[in-house]
Length: 496
Length: 144
Image (cartoon, rainbow over all chains, first blue to last red; front, side, top):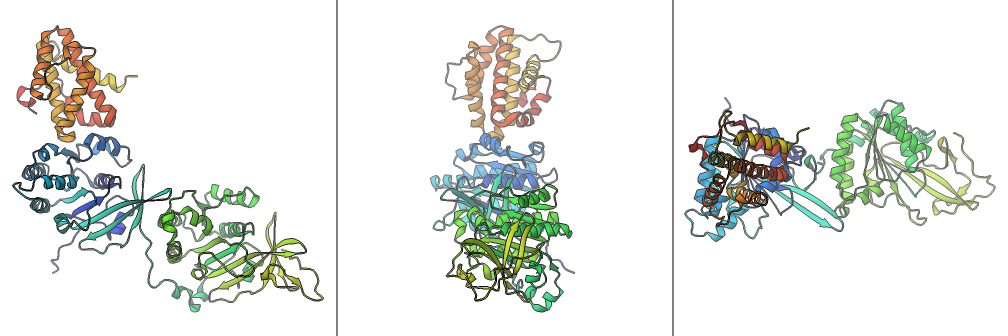
C-alpha cells in the first residue's frame, strides 16, 4: 500500500504561473514574493488570492505598514480579477499596523495567531514582511527575534494547513535573511528599463518538491492582471528526427498557391517545415506569404499571420484582410516595441490552438526584431531558434520572411544567421537587365528533399506572382549585373 | 434616479432617527450618531488600520464643521476618546434638528469620502452590516 503523501497543486489563476512553477502551487507551502517597489508583488498576490479564495477555502490578507490599505484597495479593484463579492465573504483584510507600531513581534504573532484561529484560513498573505524586518532592526532586544518570529509564523501557518505568501522587497544576497531558509517557494519579480522600453520578468528561485521552469520569464500587467509568458521549452529530441528522410517521405506536401513554385520546391513544401523567404524590400515576400495562407484556406488548412510590417493597401493585402475578416486566418498584429519573443510565442501558440491552424506566417523577422524590446535583441537569434522549435513541435508549417538588402558580393539569406534554423529557403533578388530592375527567385534549400536549383525570373502582376522559365541566357545573376551569354535570346518571360 | 450619495443620506438619516415612533432629543441623536461611528470603526479599522480610520474621520469632521459650527472641536484631537466625548457634548447641547443635521452630515461626508477612495461598491460591501441595522446598537457593542 502506498502511503506517501500526495501534495496537491493549486491552480494560481495567473496565466503562465502554474507552468513556470512546474504544475501549480503546492498546497500548504510557505512562499515569498520579492521584488523592488512597483514590480507587481501585491498585484500578483491579489490575483492568486482572488483566484483561489472560496467560502470553503477562505483567505486572510494581513497588511503591515508599507502601502496604506486604502490605497491598496483603491488600486487593486481596478483589476478585473478583483471580485467584490469575495471581500468579507471569502477574503478578509486585516491591518496589523497597530501591533507593529508597538515594536513587538510577539504582539504581531499573537494577533496573526488569533485571527488564524478565529477564521481558519486556507490562504494567508502578509504584505509586507519587509516592514517587519525594518522594525526588527530597530528592536534588536525585543522579546523574540525576527528569525524566531519568521520560524514561529512558519510553524503556526503550516500547523493550520495554510498556503502562505509573504510579500517583501528585494532581498540582497549579501544580506541573507532567515526567512529564505524557512520558505518553500521564492518568486522574484523585477523590472528593467532599457532605452525607452520597460520589461518585467519573474523567476522561480526556489520551489520545494517540484521541477520549476528555469530562467527569467517575461510578464505583462494589464487590466486583467498579470500574464506570464513562460520561456519556450526546447525539446531535446526535436528537429533532427522530423527532418529525417524516412519521415519526410510520409510528409504531406503543401501547395504554395503559386504556379511553378511547388515544382521548384520538389513537389510543394513538406508539412511541418519552416521556410525562410529572404529578399530585398518590394521583392514580393509578403505576396508570397499571402498566397501561402490563402492557398491554405482554399485547401481547408487554416492559417495564422504574425504581422509586423506596415501593410500596403494593394489587392493582395485586401485578400488577406478579407480572409482575416472572415475568421479564416488569425492575425497577431503588433506595433509594440517592448515585446519579448516568449510573449509572441505564447500568443501565437494560443491562436494556433484556437484556430486549429496548420500554416503560420511571420512577416517579417526584420519587423519582429524591431518590435522586441531592445534588451532582448542581443538574444534575438537564440530566441528565434526557440520559437521555430516550438512551432515545429506543434507540427505547423511556418513561412518567415526576412528583409535582406541585396549584396552582390555576398550571398546571404538572413541577417540573423537564422538560415540554418529553417528547413527550406527561397531567396529573391533584383537584377539589372537592359537598365531595368527585374526580380529573380531561387530555391536554395529544402532539407532532405530534391528541389530545383534554377534561378527563375518572376513578375508581380494583378493576378499575383508569375514565375517564368529558368534564366538560361544570362550569367552572373547573383552579381546583380548579369551579362547576356553569347547567341542568347532575350530573357524568357514566363507563362503562368 | 437616486445616487449613491442619496442612499447614504437616506440610510444614515433613518438610522439617526432611531426607532419609528420615537421622538428623539438632541442627546439621543448624539448617541445614535456615535453608535454609527463605532459600528463603522469596528468594521473599517481592522481593514484600513485604526490610524487610517481616524484620519478619514478627522477629515470628515473638518469638512463638515464648515457648515455646522457645533462640530468645530477646539480641544486636542489626538485622544480619540476626548474627541468623541466633545462631539457627543456639542451635538447634545443644541437643538434636536441641529444635532440631526450635523450628525447626518458628518456621517454622510465620511461615507462619501471613503467612497471616493475605494468606490461605492466596496464601501457598500464593507459597511453593509451598518446599513443592515435599523435600531441603535446596545452599548456593549460599541466598544472599538
